[in-house]
Image (cartoon, rainbow, N blue to C red; front, side, top):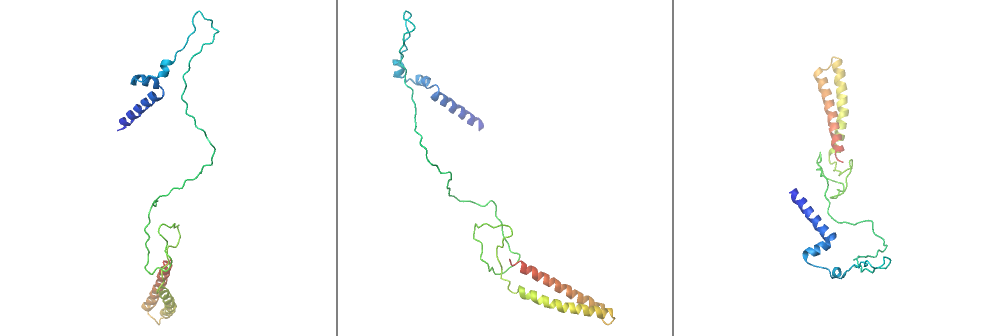
Length: 185
């Protein structure tokens, strides 16, 4: 495939050379002769004439292409219209469900890292957090009471362990509720 490109380039180069540099030879090959060339006769001074005489020689005219240039202002900017496509696409998924309460971004709008894409309605999540915080106070009181009773010999170790587990479960519920609320934005 590459050899054809090279051969084509060589052929075009040869033709350009013939048309530009060797155009007179090309005219002769084709069969056209210039009437100017037939009329052109160079006169050489005769041997017996003096060398100081002026010899008149007909000079054939040269073809010249002339263009006038005018100064003008040129715009340095180009306005192009077209369609662009993103270099990459990102799928956005929510870690939680809920009703979107913020105005969404429009298709094709720029988004930077850290931008809030949407806000979700907290629904009952705030109530769950407040309930867990109230249970925390009760669980702390129960854990302290069960520990004192067990240490004083009036309560069982099972009650003490159960109260401490309930306290840890309440703390975990609060942490989970706070994370759910933080995921709303």
